[in-house]
Amino acid sequence: MTIDGHAHACGIYLTEDTMLKYMKLHKIDKILLCGGEPNSRKDYSYPMLSKVFRGERLGYLFNKIIHLLIKKNHLAQRLDEQNKLVYHYARHLPEQVINAYWINPLEYDCMEKMEEFYVNYGFKVVKIHQCWTLIEIDDEMCSQIFSWAAKHNCPVFIHLYSKKEVIKFAKMANKHLDTVFIVAHMMGTFYLESALEHKNVYFDLSAPQLYSFSTMKRAVENFGVKRLLLGSDTPYGIDNIDRVKERIEKLVLTDEDKKNIYGDNLARLLSH
Image (tube, rainbow, N blue to C red; front, side):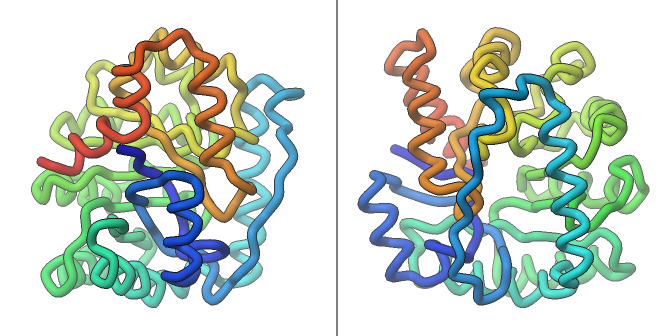
């Protein structure tokens, strides 16, 4: 089974028709879908800068740019409608779409809104994106979100903003042992190698433009294949799913190892 563990409901995934055609073409069985740019059909082409810049600063630089663009276009204010759109796809395509709930922890009533959405619609994953909603990850509101997610067996998918936030996140992950976390785009893996005390943190391999092949190889050595998850970040990067697969195929892995990364690891996390 192949699961795209990181995709957005825009670009090629804006409509059910284009979504299904793309999944069939690229041999994707399921996608973990979250919101995106409202009504946008644009697919973004990014250069593979990770082949030139090997460290982690590239990802943090992109984060600053993303944060400015999101703030300028007020996109965080439209997360509610995007969550409903993702649920719509999950209801219409239950065999293909796994829905994630994108929370805005800056809203005073975000916990009540999440609980109401969960009761009325249901979802499998909670998402926090610091570039969209820049809250410190050790804020009390985040702690409440993490505890809620653990209680409801929902992994927390998190896009970390900076090295400073990665350091704070490590402490929070060590504190919230019952919460499963998925770190987007391999952000902060060098620091997390030694900072994490437990195995409740997994790593999303999407957006290979932001991290090098050597970073992926190092993650296999330090975290193991069972904590790595295939993802694309579609539509942010043309055919990212294939680019990530190409990197995985270059690693010295067994067929079972690849099977775990391609989908079995995420399927296990979501089956609890």
